[in-house]
Every structure is written in C-alpha cells, then in structure tokens.
Image (tube, rainbow, N blue to C red; front, side):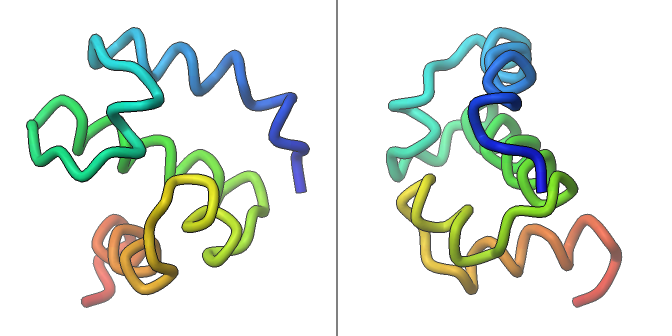
Length: 77
C-alpha cells in the first residue's frame, strides 16, 4: 500500500483537473466535476492498496458507496 502522504501530489493534480477542492469532494455535492474528481480519487486510492473502508472514512462515505464506484469502473455491477 502506498502511504496517503505520497499520494497527495496525485490527488492535487486530480483536484486541479476538475477545478475543485478536497472540501467539495468530501461534501455531498452532485455537481459533475466534483463527482468525477471523487471517483478518480477513489480509484487512485484503491489502486494504491487502500481498503474500501479506509477510503470511505477519508472521504466521508460509506464503504458500500466506495465499492459501488470501484465495481462500476471495473464493469462489475
């Protein structure tokens, strides 16, 4: 697992790409750019070895929401 502090530059790139902030990603906003940033951050953390529960805690989401995003990306529904 890649430590979270090593992923901060990658997360900042994702946030800049979608013109958003981490506070907005953690919010319950349904704005398209925020949802896309949230999904990319979830995928980055998951691919880096972080657990579904751990990602959920960091982003203020339930583990089942995180699982849903990962399964949707992988084509498993």
